[in-house]
Picture (tube, rainbow, N blue to C red):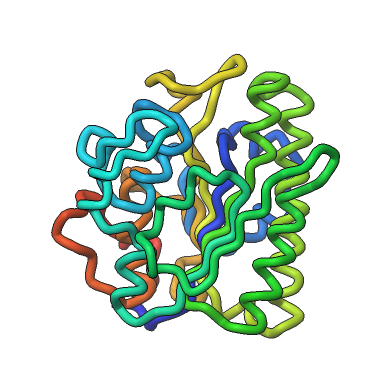
Length: 269
């Protein structure tokens, strides 16, 4: 088990690995270049946003947690999310997001702090949330923080995956990531935190729902003091492994109900 470090989980909604490669993303680049990464991690089918996030947080596939569309199924609560597990372990949890359907990723009482900031026309909600998250982390130093960014998914639906507006949206999310990293660096916290940056799904055309590689192959990047530097992961990585990997970084025991496993190859231990 590695030495416990705080974790910040960042999701770029709908961000394909080739989109991340083609866009200018200097801040995401610093994470994978100084961490462990896979450009071939696997998401789930159906590759809608709420099923994928429930797999990411609850460690099981949609056919087990029962969320198969963008409407929450209360049966998923049988599989505690990483936010629930962290709270039960006495850790401080926080969540910053712009899509209200994500509220059920934590059971009532599992979040010390939760901020839903709905997007407004002409507003860079991802940058605002990144600034909110950075300020909160600097003040309160939570153990587990979830930061959700939506721009690439919105642009994919509006203009198409891999279009110029889609790549522009990835670059905007990277600038928001830079706000977070720079402010945590100024607070002398960045080097003490494990960052996990990934996408929930990809997309093709103007949608995502099926089993095409464009929909289901995602970037998965982890960087921190206990993580190998500049290491391309050779083993398979699945979206369901995310919760168990965070538990490993936090020194928590994953529940028996999870199928996902820690990506141990990423860790120095």
